[in-house]
Each structure stands twice: as C-alpha cells, then as structure tokens.
Amino acid sequence: MLHKFAPDLSHDAIYAQGNELATVMAHDKDEEGNRIYTHSKDKTIHVADLANPVLVTDRHKINNITDYITRETVHTLFDSPFITIDYDDVQMDFEKFKYPGVWSPSIDTLFFCRALKNGNFKDYSSMIEVGSGPWFIAKYIGEKNPNLEKIVLNDINKNAEIYFHDHYTDPRFSFHLWDAKQYMEAQKFDIIACNPPYIPRPRSIDDNPYEWLSLPIYLIQNIDKILSDNGKLFLNLSSLSFPIMDAFLENPDIIVKKLDSIEVPLKVFNVLNNPEWMDYLIKEKWLKKELHDGHEYRQTLNIYEIQKKIIKTQ
Image 1 (cartoon, one colour):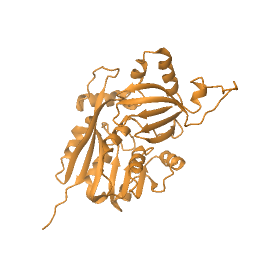
Image 2 (cartoon, one colour):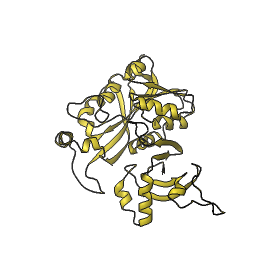
Image 3 (cartoon, one colour):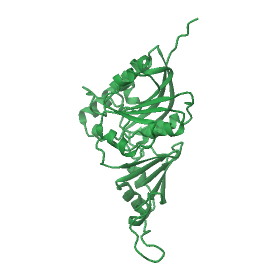
Image 4 (cartoon, helix red, strand yellow):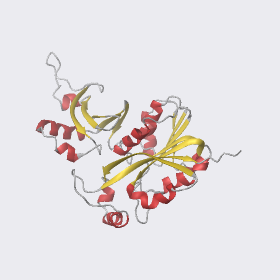
C-alpha cells in the first residue's frame, strides 16, 4: 500500500501498488488472458482519498467511506505487511513486524517534516536525528538539502540500525547505535532533529519509548555543548508534556520559536490500556475525554525551533 500525503497534510491518497494490483485490484491477467501474479512496485492504482488525516491509520475515517467496495478494499490494503510512505516526493518503504520496536512513519513524523518544509538550511553542513527509528525526518531533510555533508542517525534499538543498513543508499548518512549523548558532546551539529516520545508517565523509566521526557530535557539543557553557534534544535512536544517542559522552554539562554501545531488523537495503546497511566494524565496533565470524529482523547503536537542565545561582545 502506498500513502501519498499532500505537502500541507490536507489529504492522504491511498494506492494499491505492486503485487496488490493482482491480489486485490483484479489486475490478474495480461492482454492474452494469461494469469499474472506479480507487478512491479512502481505500478499503482488510486483507491481513495482521506481528507485532513490526523493518523496514518485512522479506522474511523476508513469506516466512514460510503462506498462498500472502496471501504473494504482500503481495509484490505491496510492489512498488507508492506507500506510505502510518500510525503512531498520523499518516499520510504517499510515492512511491518520485520524490525521489532521500529515503527513506520506516523502522522507526527510527517507533521515534523511539514514544519521544516520551508526551512533555510543552505548554510548548514551537519545534522543528527536523535531517536531516529526509520529516519524519515533525516531522509526528508537530506533529500531536500543536498548541501548537507554529514547526516547521522541515532537510536538505541538495534533493529533501527538493521533497518538503516537494509535501506540506505546515500553515503552522507551513517548510523550511531545506543545513547547519543557522549557522541554529540564530542562534535557539535548544525541541525539536531528529535521527534521524541513525549507522553509523561509517573515513575518514568528511560527505556520505555512512550514516556521519555529525559531526552528533550537533556537536549535543551546541553544545547551549548551539542549545537553549533548558529545551529538549530528542532523538537516535537505534546501538550501533555507542557507542565514539565514549560520550565525548560523558558530557559533565558535559549531562543524558542513555535513553528507549527496540530491536534491529533492519542492512539498509543500502551498508554490507553494502562489505567494508572491514563489516570495520571487525566488528573495531572489535563487530558480530557471528549468523543468526536471517532476518538475520545487528544493531544496537541508542537514543533519548536530552539537556538542558543549568542551574546555579542564589543
């Protein structure tokens, strides 16, 4: 299945691709009537458009497709183990379940790219994506900015490194496994991008990827050691984290600019199915239960551009 997202995220165009044309779309015979089982991956058939996507997999929107055949076809395509994400002509292929703990790009990934779409990075030469997973953000920035000479991906999940080596073709890219702190402190970067886990949890532990606020806190507190003087740190932070993160964003030594925001459903099942975690978010972080458009809980995601405040001496 191919998702082709509009650059402004106004719609998600869904296509059958490759062998799905034979198995799902009835293109299973050639002109002579011979059976066809395979098609090249670049062959596609448009199936449906979902307006204003707030999730990559939004069952509510799919269930509201009025035409029965189209609706069931879309459901079947979503069951495919193979997915291609296309945003602003940058594509990434992903095979579900092949790389445990590594997820295909989600709506917050694409939202992050939208916020940086018009960024001016022509004077920058180095970048690191911290907590990169399948590194779509770095891939997007790298393809749009050929002037970048060094692009580092970082993650603590060995499967993310395996995914990288299975898919990268650009020699500017490299992968650093495990904690990036010492690695970054030994060399400053012009661009640091981080789409971190942003949902706070009581008694948080850092190896749970859904509750990891220690990473954005570290990046802000150590910005002088890891970011070049004219460089930029980009962070995605949830409204649920503000009671904790506000104090760090108010640091007088940094310049903070909010680039973009989007409201999305809270669809992290390890959160939704954890009564203690949900109780904490509702009581302490102002998460509200309000059903509309098929979803009960929401958060607002915000992309921040953070720079060091440089004091010029006479």
